[in-house]
Amino acid sequence: MKGNRIQGTLRSYLRWPLMLTPLLLAMNVHIYFLDVKAGAVMTIYVLLYTIIAFLLLYFKREQLLKDIVTYAIRFNNTTKRLANDLDIPVLIADYAGNCLWFNKSFQRQFCNEGVSRKFAVDSVIPNLTVETYPKTYEQNSEIHFHNEDVFYKAVIQKVNVDKVTEENGKKAETMGLGDNFYVFFIYDETEIVHYIKENNDQRLDVGLLYIDNYDESLEQVDEVRRALLSAVIDRKINKYMMKIDAITKKLEKDKYIFLFKHKYLAYLQNDKFSLLDDVRTVNAKEENSITISMGIGTQGETYKKRQEYSRTAIDLALARGGDQVVVKTKDNLLYYGGKSRQQEKNTRVKARVKAHALRESIEVAEQVIIMGHRLPDEDALGSAVGIY
Image 1 (cartoon, rainbow, N blue to C red):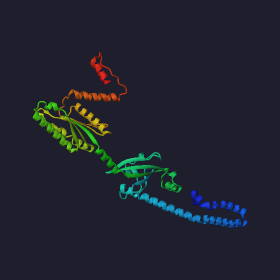
Image 2: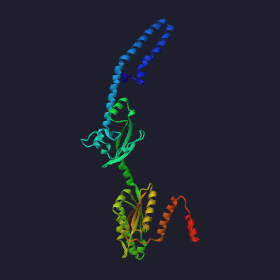
Image 3: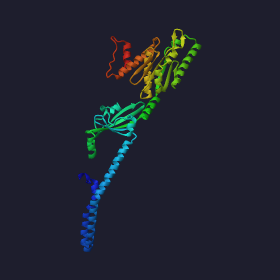
């Protein structure tokens, strides 16, 4: 049968003894020219060599084929056993997303007892729908999903039946694979996700804390009481910062900067920044409570960027009347507090906030036209030059 013939490199390797026969015959002819008796003796040995090589090739071919088939079967069984015993879940599905085969690891992690071996893949793992399958053979799909507290990454590979061997292709057709089928390799990436989250939680966020009405509240208080109130405020701030393991530094009499790990931001948000209420209980005068504002910068690519976010956040908090916290992320602003009656801020704060907003508008604009008002005076000209 054609299927039992030895082909390719192995066929050439087995025939090389016969291919050397013409070389031996040519050598035999040359020896005849040198010595007839020696040529006759060599002719006998060449004939014996040719007969033995032919007999070995003819009679040992069947045994060689049997040995090759036996090795192939053992190798195939070993491959199947290795695939079935792999630690990572492996699944094969048809073009419609119906499971055709899965290994022990997949059954152990995703299948309940008594589950049928024929099921839709998305009925077991809802994230692996047909729409997520790769469209080409060269590009694999990667889908991330989680089951309770375990995180997985599924790598989906599209396989063409025409590229498998003839025998396996026939088996594929009988299995109903059609022209294509899909192989799923599912990796447990829980540890990687954990380390990514831990690394993100260890990053430092930057915060600025300003006492809104420090001068207004303490200007008419005697010096002894003023020092006492300042110490009380410092103690409340430092005590609160100790809860989040923050590094706090007092920049001025009414300004602080603090650094803390990102993982504590969720605690502050759930706590609704209770420091606002705590400081508000400090009364310098009966009709005036001391309030604070905080600006926090997070999710910046660099610490400098987070510091810029915190500066923007504190300016927004002051412009909105103070007694509140503004958290600025890369794409969002979050507001907390603002329970007390908003107080008018000094002109410098308002000017800084408006100047910052104007600068951002100018930076993103393609064209900027600077002009003064009608009948311009020295102020209009100076302002235009300053903006320029």
